[in-house]
Length: 298
Image (cartoon, rainbow, N blue to C red; front, side, top):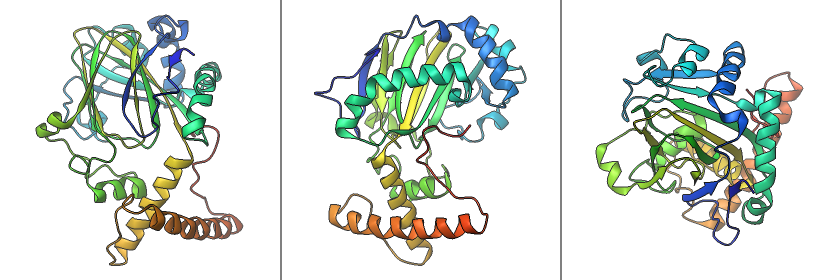
């Protein structure tokens, strides 16, 4: 495996440091990424902001608050001086990079499936950053293998069950509306963080909804994330969406995870209701929210 995942120690809901053998991969070198950036820009799959963003900047609003006026190719080609953070989004939209994402995730899937079956919604994200830029504090739905290719950075990440860092209500809003309005940065978060220092050949694993923030080192950086959903991430999302709906009705639902038995019953009811609702929506020509496709939609 090019991502070195130990079957004896891998825990799907625990942050952990990893090693890998991807730093020299030709698709992840800057010349290849400049050309790829052009294709992603044509697909409108580039996200970027300037080095003025901080840990406390709204992740959703960073591109508007601190716009990078240069295009993808210009930024990537001069990343050492560009004072910019750039993400090439949903790289699986590109046939060449989709094959690469599949190669890597197919290698680690047997280890993952033993503890966390149902891999789906595969995706990839490539981050190219100027020296000393910051990825603002946020969290994502997917499980995430994050691998450092060039340069150094410091990854701060938190347990996905740490309710001092992100509250139960913050989790509900995130799963229901993809809202990060209650996923907010405070300097005292640092004291509870798991810190992973990344350099070429090193990486980390972050489970779904593990909050994180990244500080880039003094050199340009290239990083790639391989992400996916599983049965457990989809189950947890449905439970939080159910709790959010109950709260809108004036109820005070028990937090997800406080009772395995209660969660099992609640999930069965929510799954049945959701299936019935989706049948009606499809029959009437309306869109359906799904998260079990092989690949995340671009």
